[in-house]
Each structure stands twice: as C-alpha cells, then as structure tokens.
Length: 128
Image 1 (spheres, rainbow, N blue to C red):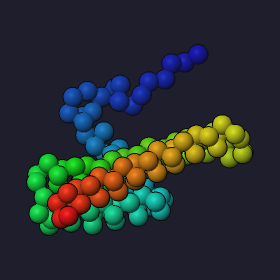
Image 2 (tube, rainbow, N blue to C red; image 1 turned 180 degrees about the vertical axis):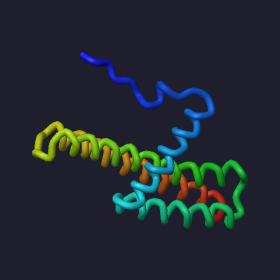
Image 3 (cartoon, helix red, strand yellow; image 1 turned 180 degrees about the horizontal axis):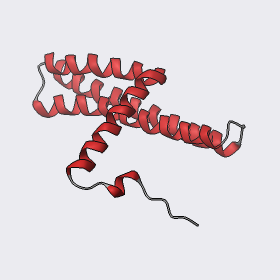
Image 4 (cartoon, helix red, strand yellow; image 1 turned 90 degrees about the vertical axis):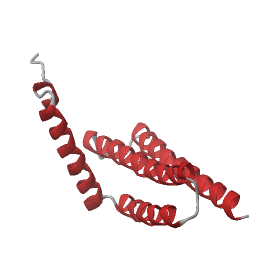
C-alpha cells in the first residue's frame, strides 16, 4: 500500500503559512458561493460588527459580542465540512449520515442560541 502524505508535509515555514492562508481564502470563498446559511450568518456578523463598535460597551463586551458571532461562522463552516464529507461518501439515505448532519446542525443551532443569549445579556445589562 502506497503511503500518501498531505500537501502540507512537503512545505515548511513561510511556504506552509502561505499555503494555509490560500486554503483559508479558498474555503471562505467557496462557503460564500455555495452555502446560503453561511451568507446569511456572514451578513449578521457584519451588522453585528458594526453595532458592536457603535454601542457604548466596554472593550471586553465588544470582544464578546464579536466573538460569539465569529463562533457562529466557525461552527457553520465545520457543519458544512461535515455535510460535504457525508455527501462525498454517499448520497444514499442512511441513519448515520442523518445523525452526522443533524449533529452538525444542532451545533450551529446551539451556537446561535449562545450568541443570542450573549447579545441579550450584554444589551440588557448595558441599557436596562
């Protein structure tokens, strides 16, 4: 059996960082192109970013507000990766494939809930 190595294994130092950065950009561009949920969440992130800098909150509160929205994007990307791998393996309906996709969706849902609770708490404490 021939051993396959990652494309990263052949790169080191600055070349590896450049390659990783390129893959990051490619992943974000592809998510923008094919993932409707990612586009929606990115819009919410941009609006939240603007509000976070306009609101009279502390630096830590601002970081928290932005951080939870960024976390939603991160978990959405992981969920999309899980869905892509499941679909790559087989488009056939299977209980384990359903579980994998449902678990990813649940992770996104819980992260959105965390973001909503965080924003609600910060705004309530600041303005009520």
